Image (cartoon, rainbow over all chains, first blue to last red; front, side, top):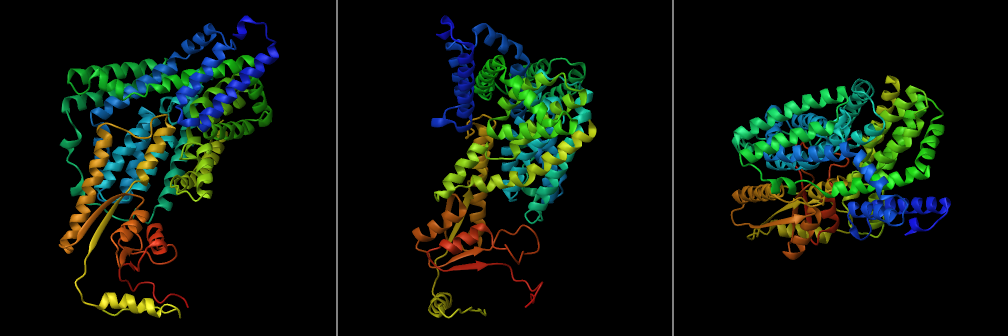
Length: 435
Length: 161
């Protein structure tokens, strides 16, 4: 190991940057279909083995980020247990009943429901749980599936900066660049509403012909069918309402949000075990454990780059690029974060931006706030640009199409390209006006 | 029934054959096809990957999606059988346009009937882009004549000459 040999600082820096780049390129391209967690952990392991980061430093980094890890765990557990109670199915059926047979009103209700779920349970719950629920619903109702599916996947991100807990990347950025709840809401609530309105407007325009029809209410499943166990369902609603209130209070008091999420998850788990709705094993199976490997690996890799001074230089470069103005900060922050989320994933991008912007804390407050709000905004909304995952995926699909290979994903990516730049621009301008 | 045949100087023989098929009065064998479009499911898989999950979900949710698709397909084919009790039915999964063309070839269909596009509203769409991508693909690739169907309407006619 290099740590046993006196290697010059220059070569240590070069090696660290090389391994970090290799890790990021690996995450972008996923060679041999390797899991992102494996690639991030391999990068971190290589840095440790070569002595480019000490085990103590790596351990300290992971411990310092306990709030993020537990928030992810609490958030995923809450969603999984709420799903087991039939809450998402029940909400979707209620959205359909309130639509009064109109496909267009159901579309609006799905948008509103997606916004509510993203706001209180995070974008993860909307994209991964609400989408299949709505797919089943509209298939039963014989309505066109695609508009409703896009409504879910887009609103998951578009409504994911209404509150700090609406997106895990918000937690990552805020753990390094804290904003009090009032400032968060002052800077991001209106841009969020503007983005939701644009998303809704463009989608209504695009899918107007498919949303003209009506559906047969008789096709809706009876409420009894969606709620598997009434006492557990009511208990889940009660716990989630309490958790929502606790989230807002904790954000205002700067109390760690992960404790609220974990507390709510444990309460739900106790209820699920008591009423025998889920076992511990079933709950554990619904949690994506590899995410912890991914974010853990990325935290260590970014920590190693931080030691080289590269992230600070990146932060200073962003500051220079912004011209030291709040307008520049918002534009640079939004564009940088949005582009980065499509190049790599939004989680590592949030880590990189969070660390890099740590070095602009000497800048005037409006510039700092502009950067932080724009980073949260860009990391949350950016993924909508390439609905197929990342720019690397889009490039790959383009290559496949050039080779006359049939690809369907590319057609879907057009939707993101059509609506996201508009939302980014309108949101960024609104943030700037609110600074 | 009055049939309008559009000639282009090269197609008189094709028109004769098509008219002969429609006018024979012989007993037709009807096949009814419904394709479960897997495109939206693939998109859900891509969304899952973006959220760092494996593309295919598993468990009760996946089962519910499959059951709903199958129930809808069976229901739609049953509705078709109400009008064509003797019809042979086909249920497929995949890209609808490709499955239609392939089933037409495998079943050695003499004629494919297809709606210009799925109509969800009360008024049929007529005009540019009123033929959807599935019908366009089938017209382009079908191994037999294709009859493009759409509701009868007199609105918006005559169009500017």
